Image (tube, each protein chain N blue to C red):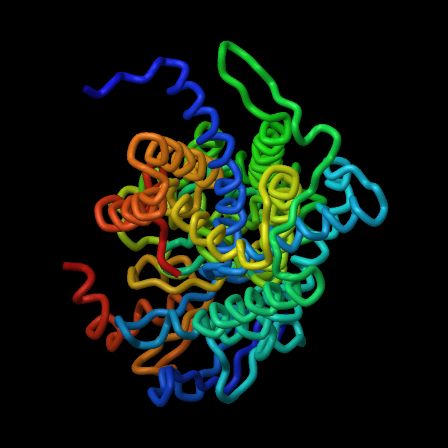
Length: 241
Length: 297
């Protein structure tokens, strides 16, 4: 129980009458990378959306450093220190790269440090500096994903949530993406990551949870789960084709 | 035999059309802003313009405040009124995300404003007559009135300021971001209510500016606003939803169409052609003449 930043206990989320999560409990230590893995429809995105307030919590608790996240609106949760890069990236495609980054620092606390945050983001993503004046929608898929992550770091969040950062990217760009996540980790950013690219995700994760039809089926360190024969059979065999 | 009209006629018609159309345009810019963040067609916008026109007239008649000078009162009052209208009338419906209710509230607000104006100022046609109302400007064989020219400049300035606000300020950028993707905007810590309230405040302030232009140029009555809203809607469709400059341009194009139809075809055809163009644009170029397809919310 070193330094628990995020604690989700016994979480239930439903779409109307259809329950999507059945008593899910996860935790994220400050400074760590935690991966949520599992098949399509297991409830991974649902879990992330409940944490950032986009879906209502039916039962259970979500706490960030002791403060409850079950109840406040998404914009309030964002201001509490959660930056969520959603599925589909959520870029403002008609706006420029620079405008997208500026909006990442919209909240009052971040606004004061916009200059430094921008320099830091450009240092990490030099490509974005070259494209600062271009519309976000005109970037390549990989660049768009970089922009979405860079924008999320603009507020210097306590917790960075990434939903399928590797989706739709070429294998080479996927490699860049994961090494970028490791760089952010080294800089001290706490990351909660959902991935279908299970092997890669477990390789960089300090700790991981396996979601299966709305429940946590297994958990352990990334290394433990990679070595687990059941995981290899159920998920990696398919992925390593 | 059909006599081809002298070239000055075309200049004169274009000028008249552009000056009148700018009024539709500035109303359309307000509609565009409010539609952008709330996906609501604010049908009461025209009634707000007429209300502002009566307000300008009252300031002039009771306190002798020059109509153009009254902009410094009308615009701030419009900002405050827009903020209050959102917080008081639309906030709850916006929470429920019920656009039908929002639309009904807008229609209700329109009827309320129309009837209140009738009670207070009577249903007769009103106008503001100043020392310069009849003065004209002559250039290159065409002529126009001073007040119409001022109205046009107010429309241009209003639209220009809104564009500057949306492009140069962080809050303005947040309004654009929310228009494009409200969910993603909320993940940046942008409050939908704040953005909606800002859109309303700016939209009603623009209605105030348009009210000044209307009061000094046209005779008006409490029920003139609805037609104004409809024309603004046509302008919006022409210009493309989501583009502020497009909305103004759409209004000017509509004004030009009306001026030419009135001269060459006949006054009774202007509305029929205006709404015909509206339908044609919606059917064949729903993103507008300058717009881009927008993301459905």
